[in-house]
Structure formats: structure tokens, C-alpha cells
Image 1 (spheres, helix red, strand yellow):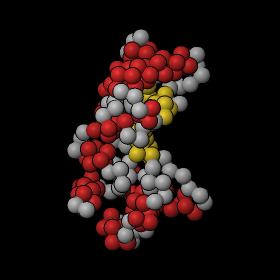
Image 2 (tube, helix red, strand yellow):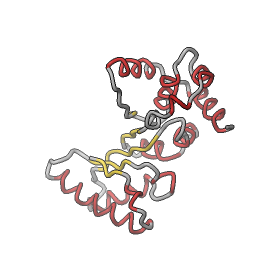
Image 3 (cartoon, helix red, strand yellow):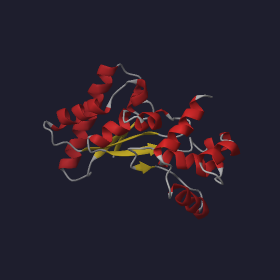
Length: 189
């Protein structure tokens, strides 16, 4: 179970953290009762805006559990060529994905195609730079799945053919040095 976009409540940090601690306490009760196996936080901007950090979430989970034995298991954040900061940070061995992975949490990347908009924004030249012969959709997905410290990329497919194309695109991730070149090119505008 994920606490979804807690930062959208537009609370100050202290109130947000208190609400998260309260939510985690309920989720800890569910976990102890066997109703859920664990929980996570799915955030759109909480990590990038400074609303919370992975370390703070772990501290809140420990407080909610009353011990170090908590059931916080995952974090989810957007990872794409539009939301490329998590990729750049992970390539530098920093950021929420690296911190979560180091803490033993499963990392999920959402919106790898930015709600379906990214394949229409990417040029054939960018797709060819990412991987020669790739379609814009495949190249954009490939960049997301190549992000270091990312365990799962969340993707929907409207047809079996789209799913097969996504699997094919993700089969051979980019080397970190090439992914860095891609993010550097995009950062130049």
C-alpha cells in the first residue's frame, strides 16, 4: 500500500511529517494484523521540493512502529527525461533513489513517458542519440529503465504490441556513461 502524494496537502513540513507518522502508525497496525505486507510513499514532488527525505520517512516509520522493526518498504517518484533530476542524482551516487536503495527499500519510478506526452516531445534525433534505430517512445522508456538504483518502472500499455515493444526497449539498459551524456545533452536545452 502506498501513501500517495502526501506533499499535495500543502502543509508545512512539521504538519506533513505528523500526518505521515499518523498514517504510518495505521499502516503498521495493518501490517501487524497481516492485512498488508508493507507500505511505501508515492510522491510526485516531495523529494524534489524538500517536503521530506528518505531518511525522514525512515525515522517516521521507526517512530510509528515504536522500534526499528517497521514495514516501510518502498518509495516511488517520477523518473523520466522530463523529470530527469532523479536520474542525474543517481548517476552521481546521490538522491532519494540511492538513499532508498541503501536503506533496503524498493524503488519505483513512475511516469517514465510523462503521461504519454514524452514520445511526442522527443525528436527522432534524440531517440537516435539514446539508441540508434529506436522510436522516441522506446528511447524515452530506455532512459528511465536505465536509471541507477531504480528497481521497478511503472508503465501501462494499451495493447499487447505496446507491452512487447516496452519489454524489448527495456531489455538492454544504457550504460551509465551514455545515460549521463543523454542527461547532459538535455540539460543544455
